Image (cartoon, rainbow, N blue to C red):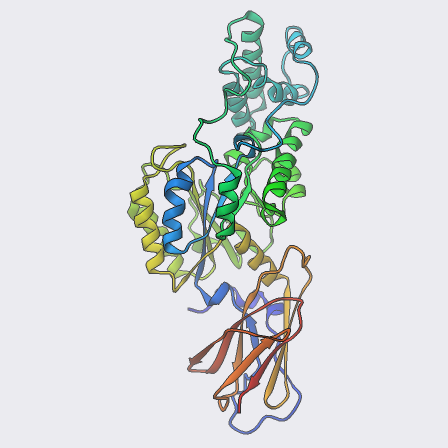
Length: 445
């Protein structure tokens, strides 16, 4: 199928500079090189992502993925994992001072964030619900209602209509994932990424408490897993609050909430826009399977990916097999993953981080080729930080028809490749690292 947006990417394809005259009868496109839209020339990309770190994601879903050879991205709340250095807390004035002030000054946009940041840590049962509901109102753009909700919470506290609870009572149950298990799963190729310390409504936190949740989660992941797992983040509840996005994008290279790239159309989980209606080279299409989502609808998302060549399907799972929010059954996941596996020749299943890196590298790279008789040299350069962006891109170079056997190397290492025969001639597909030594394609006589 013809790629819809190839005319928009002139920087990605540079015609060959012939250093010697071509022999008669050679393919006139010899040496032309392009960076393929997806790794290995696949039609679409799929990322299997999970939020909250509930235990059956690892006891049920992860083994199913391992059977199929699929990597996943798990957005985890580090404060819920034993051994994490940083826990959820309130940073600010003494609680007694804030509570006393609420009796004489109504909650308003000037004091809302401080009060909402503190309310869940006052030590009384049920107050975190007020934080969550007020945060939902801010996300919906209704600051007035958020102020009313927080006022209701503090009025209950002042009246003594609340019950004391232990400070850590709001954490999940005792069957929790451990860092030792996470390190093992990470060594298998799964990505572990930030979902904050405690899953708050970030849109209603003040600056210092928002930064604590975002930065300290990242620090714990760095300390436990290393820098390669500090690339991605999902701010809880799928918030797209502009204030939150501004802070989070300063801390993380990629957010599932928001990917502000000129070449990427974003269709969030609630969007009813069909990916074919998007007008950019790439489409991040998020779908969130819930407990009552029928399997045929989930399979239809895969069918759509098989028709178009610009879709990045980001699947968002939460609960699994009765544990967690909107839990989906293990049998449904098994059937769904099997359907993806049956179509893996056309689908690139990769972590959220890897797909992000591939797109950014491709859109910020330039490829140039030159030929001197029995050798083609391909130079692939990019303007991104090589410490973060070091994923191999898939290139496709047209070959002379008379070349029967070839060898390909980069930086002295032989590369795997696949010869492709098409009506317009012969080409070769292979991986190449941007910003490293040139790729050398030689005719093996």
